Length: 508
Image 1 (spheres, one colour):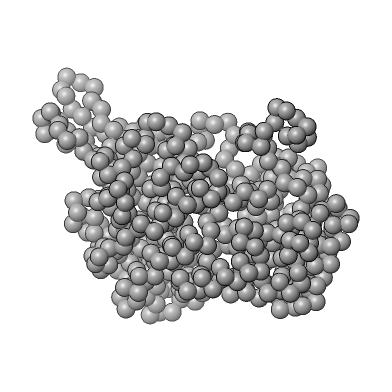
Image 2 (cartoon, rainbow, N blue to C red):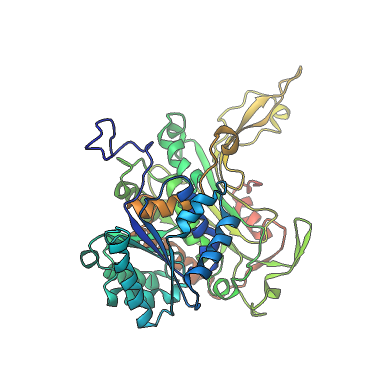
């Protein structure tokens, strides 16, 4: 029942489940890794939680010459393997009956004509009033081809379809500022700008959204969230894996373009932004954009940043090859697998506070976290020997894998002397809440279908992020990455970068 018929229901009440209108989800590249590992399991989990409408259809489009039955068996295997929620055969049977497959290549006009006809048939048969979201689970090079096909057939046209038509674009959003502008212009021409969803799956993680809850729902943190009390901020994204099967993409991009430009700058923006006037998507994005515009890269990139490339080593007790020994990597590649940079934010709140951002592959363990390091107490009335074990107070937001929040502060050690050392209060999502956190793609797919753009960066944010990365890439162009062994926390030069300022990386 809608809120007009039910006086107790208001549109603002987020506790009520948000269920989309009847619609179709069209997945381009439906047989690929992302679709099998993330999208199909997310659709099953949403169905299992009762969050999809009765009139919901998944249309898969890929080059393989498969039929609906073959597609259903692939989807079944993917859903069973990747589902977060318990397996219920009745839910799957209901969902699988709404799966269809359209074979064809991206330059095949007849295949796209068939896709358009299928969507029109669904409007009549399933009571879907022209609503469809197109998910681009495809290489960025194919975006223009598919966008032009959607424009040619009129599938991107809201008026022609009689409902809403939305497009979901996966990162990377271009390879530099110029290519990002070109891609943004093309996608905004084919679809109306408010119907474009640029997905950054990090923003779908519960722990990332909790940054906003932690800051703006409590009076405890915001008074000290500024340069008067904060010494520095460290944002770390460490992966224990190598490049896997992504050699061609990774060697052409490197660590900075792969995740620093999107995931880590988005995390930085959420940590540093001012309180929005409301949680309207436009208000949230406006505050994030102000931060991105205020970012200052180091005056001397050579001393204020470090690039690294992993050598052979040991990770979690297993032998790991070096980057240059990875399959399909040129033996003379100078692509970085590690990047660390000291950024500043030129506004009153964050003046003189360094933001140290690092990302790396083949690190000792997988962890993504944001550490707010506070200034030392201005005066310690203790004997120096009693506070040798006392460090900076820290608030650590763990994004993955052990999602939670850690607060580190000094406390007296039990005994007859006044010895003070750091202790940690540790909150973990898995222990505090009975319901497990939904996967990022669950939240983001649902947001697309209900039309909520809060967690999706817009074109201006993407372009501003490239304004930060492009000058770094230009300065790094003729340099060779610093070596570090697989299983180490990056090159020695990275530790020296912080050491010169009297600081050290937090051991994540």
